[in-house]
Image (cartoon, rainbow, N blue to C red; front, side, top):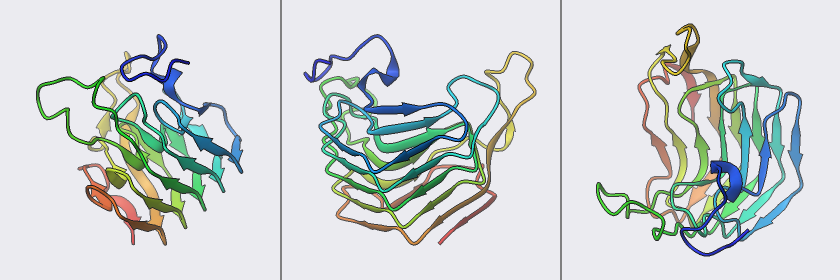
Length: 190
């Protein structure tokens, strides 16, 4: 892959080091350095079914988002029962060369650990260390409701039963914990 700003492959995940979209997967003990976009992405992609029983643990994601701005060290969406624990995420670059030039897109959009924007349930993010990024942990969810991208309009969106506990976040360029959601009603953050 070309690591020049503004150049990736034809798909969103082309700039991501590890992508896992299956049930019962474990992403463990990896060192990811110099990723063009996200370090680790897990969950269902455009699938109405939630991906379950995933574990992301003991990974180090360093010096990522080198050619894209709006990416995270660890990112997930459409999951149920994900465990994200004991990871170290540091030093996001956040290249703005590939960003739109209007609407504030030249700002640092990098994130250490990112909750996606459709459905996340029964997920625990605990004992991670995050530093040198835009926002430490970002929860970016739509309100509980119906997934309008589903042609049958039958799958609920939002967050339920999630926990963010015992993480160490410091030296961020933005918020340590960013709650951008109206759909976080039944989750615990401490």
